[in-house]
Amino acid sequence: MAFPIPDDLAPELYPLAWLLGRWHGFGMVGYHEIPQRDVVAETTFDHDGGPYLRSTSTLWLADAALSGPVDPEMPGAEGHRSLVKDVQWATETAYWRPVGSRQAGSGTAVDLEVVCSDPAGSLSLYLGTAEGPRITLATDAVVTSPSAARVSAAGRMYGLVASDLLWVQDLAAFGQELGPYSSGRLSRVEQ
Image (cartoon, rainbow, N blue to C red; front, side, top):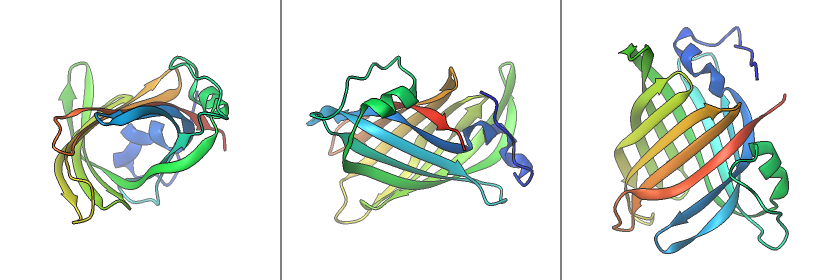
């Protein structure tokens, strides 16, 4: 799917322009004592002309009684239509900042710093790279409020596959080692 690059997009953001827009789809969450559940996922990547992207993401648990089946291979939009939102599971706001680039393999790797916060009391700094339509991030620091769940590390990967945004998140929390926590598939919403 083609997407326009806005005229006022800072040149530093050109390698991340494929993220811009509204995305929705489906996924799953599950972690050690937390049973695996289907989720409805929505994310927006936007900008205000500065040298960074802003993202907002929300996950809702799917109502198991009212939702239809989803297959991980189906497009994000199709899975989004199959699931009915129940309670909100998580939400976050993040700022994505390219901080340099270098040659890597057959292309250019863009170094990223991503600051992510959520209302559950967690603030994370991710460092990573974007290489074409693939982004890999790992936490450099995690700060939690006294009442928040103890999160010690996290990792994320994003990729553009068949015009869908696929993502996975690993988490180290509650004294557990880094392990799978959530994943999903999102389709771009036409504006």
